[in-house]
Image 1: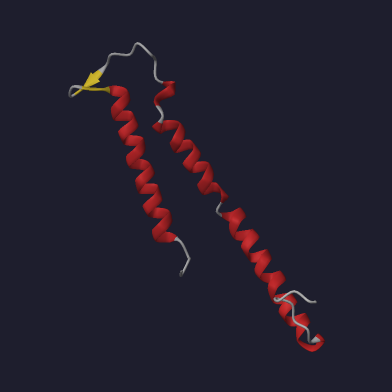
Image 2 (image 1 turned 45 degrees about the vertical axis):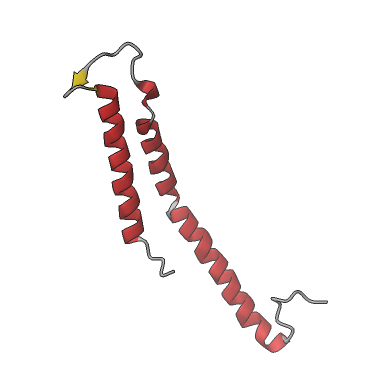
Amino acid sequence: MPAPFMITSCRHSRPRMAFRKELRMKESQEKRSRRWIAFVYLGLLVLVIPWYWPGGDVRQVLGFPLWSLATLGAVFATSLFTAWVYWTSDDTN
């Protein structure tokens, strides 16, 4: 029994199969072209988590520890980047 998505008519199977192949190629190219976004998010994640900050650092700005302000800045940058990715996406869904 053929799969439900397969075309049983030989006359129409080639154009549809070619369309599906083209669609798969386009999807894979989109995935590759958008892969850099994941790397940006990983970089921002590294900045958000203050593991790189020295343990005994007591510097303060306006009463807040400096590491917390750096983390808040990275969170703000992440939200701006997320908004930019959303607004510039081609997705019509």
